[in-house]
Image (cartoon, rainbow, N blue to C red; front, side, top):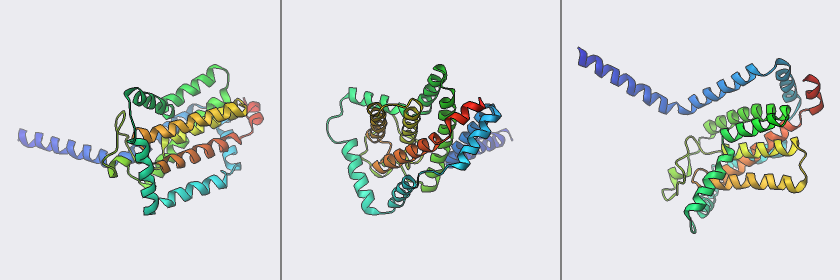
Length: 255
């Protein structure tokens, strides 16, 4: 009887583990949604109302949405996949790959993750930019949710699934490939900083160059195809511009 009970417990654990693996994307979506709910819960109600009104009034730039849609549709074309694979391998395995360059690329790619975004938000709070800190935190969580939804819908596999010669640097990326979440996040952050600090042209170009470099690192480390990066750059930039359209002076009056 004891052995039967133990066997039943083991089978139950295996089924739970299998279920968690199969439904990992949905679990991630649920966790992101919960994070967004918690953040909204602790933000002052007048700020929540303001953001909601601003979101209802604005429209995301049609040209960027069109470009993103074209990229998504192009995934079904075999010619596009061949070009994507060729350019991916060019940046991923061609030429010399010294250890110092690997470390540099792994370091730069972290600028697009959640911890880096949290650091940027805390920096904005520390220097008194409360408005832009709220925008960055809320915008990032919603953007993360959008990216995960798109990955679930489009369901494109990572490059290393199809291309066995892929060179992985710093560990295999989890989840689906299109669009690039790191690239989306870093371009969104760049736009928020450019708008928030009214950066001059040279500084703005520098921010975009840094964001572009993060996108390149995602190919270098073996996590994304070029079209994933392009889609992430368009999505993140459009989302940043969208949030930047919110009336700054009206927000100040609420605080």
